[in-house]
Image 1: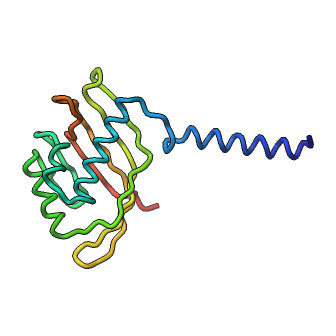
Image 2: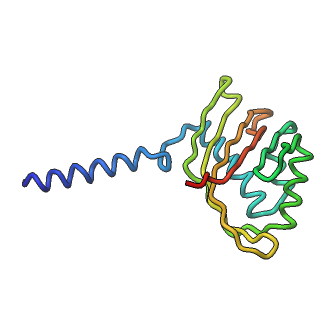
Image 3: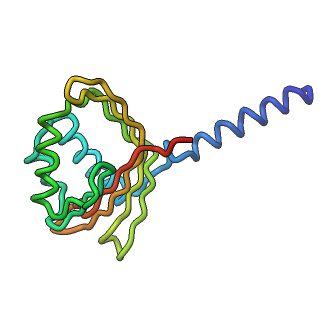
Length: 159
């Protein structure tokens, strides 16, 4: 085999192994999978179903929501859900894709931090918009399920 072919094969093998080890394809353990399913189910409830009752199932009573548009956090489940009720009135989501999750588990499996990136297209009061950013959530495991206790999202910084 020629040296040129060996180099190409080596580069190709490296690319395959790198892709397999990327965060997009990283194997999650069962707890991480459960956490990620809870985050995605929460997001589906507000973005696709526009269902506050379903969404509330994934929210802790003492949640803090920090948004780029408000100086003060939404403090507590009632305030958090009220912010989404206003969202439902003004926004229609066309597409939401979460990707590249990084999940860290703490407190002997009772708490977790989840970071992921997201892309969303939506109509806001008649105007088409696209959001590309990141979300950081803190979850706690209570009464047999993962609940979001803090959520902070932001758009990517401009380069």
